[in-house]
Image 1 (cartoon, helix red, strand yellow):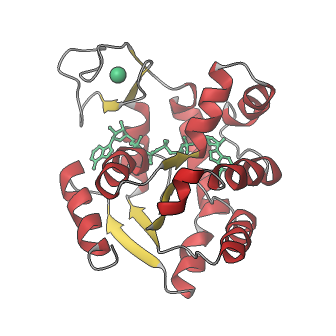
Image 2 (image 1 turned 90 degrees about the horizontal axis):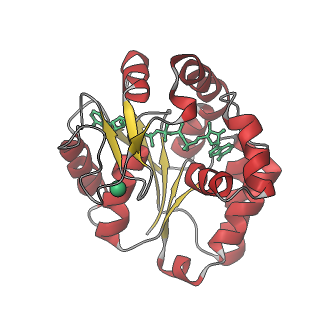
Length: 216
Ligand code: AP5
Ligand code: ZN
């Protein structure tokens, strides 16, 4: 199964990606996570990506496409993959098509998680992430058992730098302009699956499983 998770910042892509990757035994490839790890490791890629991420802007296409192309060469991607946060521009979508056409392995589905914009600001500004394992929580909607501490590993929870209200608003504007056109792109080629993201985390996952039934 070769999947794309599409949706605005805060729609729940990362949250659902963990369950999808586990259920279907496919690697979870998040370009945002790749950049955050590179930044943590202080690599040149991380420093470059930071310039854009801090402003809520997209990292340039040529950088992102090169990274994903290399990642898709990984042996673990032969059985399928879940792309989270890529593609994000028409240029990236076309590049992905070319890469996959070359392999004769087109995308199975593009899962688009829909959530109204007013909810997204609330989700982004209330998100907390584990410093150690990357697990995601929310101060209202998905609380950890102990405030500030990860249930899974006991790590400390922090707020992403780009989850401030002003940067979150900029990210949503960038999404609207540069990424939202991809909904039509995948609809036109008959690969789009639309999921109502304004439900409980479990219900969203059940809807995704229902939509994928029969293609696995
Ligand atoms: P990235 O890390 O990809 O961020 P994003 O797309 O903005 O998505 P988020 O991680 O913010 O949201 P999500 O949909 O994963 O939501 P989550 O599950 O955490 O990208 C960051 C930056 O990297 C970009 O701005 C850009 O600079 C760069 N970048 C990355 N990819 C790029 C690319 N392809 N091209 C160029 N640049 C790129 O959930 C959000 C919150 O809501 C959490 O607190 C969660 O607990 C809660 N929640 C989840 N589901 C529910 C629910 N059903 N009900 C209530 N709360 C929920
Ligand atoms: Zn943790």
